Image (cartoon, rainbow, N blue to C red; front, side, top):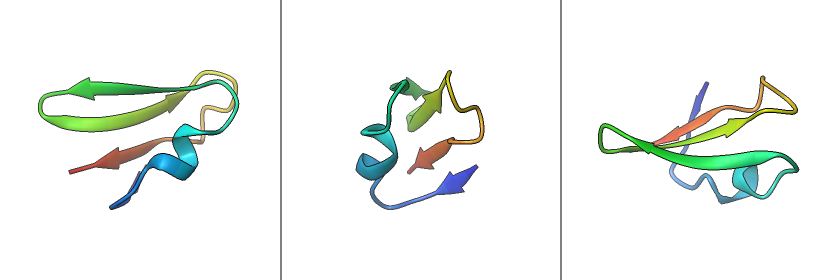
Length: 40
């Protein structure tokens, strides 16, 4: 999982959703499970 200051580039990819958990922003991609990122 990548920790990035801006997750917009990963959030724009096909099949990805932005999820908020425990005060962090996560990008989870169902089509490509390797595309994961956390912000904060």
